[in-house]
Length: 263
Image 1 (tube, rainbow, N blue to C red):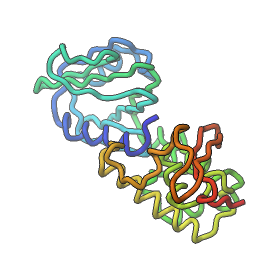
Image 2: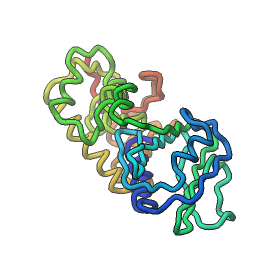
Image 3: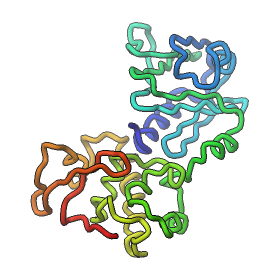
Image 4: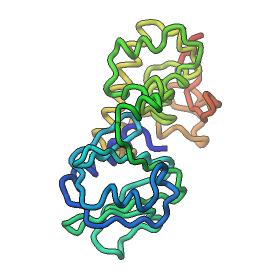
């Protein structure tokens, strides 16, 4: 599932590629991912308009049209935006395409069709309706620390709760916990002010570093944990055994002994 850095990369590419270009054609091949509009309504919303800006909050990325309407691109498991000029390059699982005045085509590719594409008339009201929390790169330290007060849930469950803080999923939650040397099953409400300071600092550093590297895992720092989140890794040299368990319904990796369990 794309998390904040992956969605941020998609948003940046969109921002750099199609802003201020006139939309001259919209074709819908499969409308299952259009969650609140028919193909006809979707085409009417976009035809003749221009995207003039973008907005991202957590894993939610919006293209903003010149009339103020927002188009939500929620990528789901396998959604992606593919840019091309000739139909020979059309992606295999394209669900719709948007053609621009310079000949560029944006094809929305989604093999598993878990994406959510919505036409949003009023963004603040929509965000309030879905109760989306503040972005993990925007939230203040005071807001972050307040989330933990009297919480009985696990640290990892709290970090992945999109209504409290938006953008962190399975991969980056494990990375944050590993670098903080805190077990992901630790009780969120039992963490000290010092623990929270460390978590907040590392959360911002890790997510920003991943964004700066365009969510390209192969060039992530060598000391990051993500490459060892595998059943093939039994021991992390100099640190301990790599453990695996379900936390908040998600497969979770950690290093036994190296990451302290706080309850």
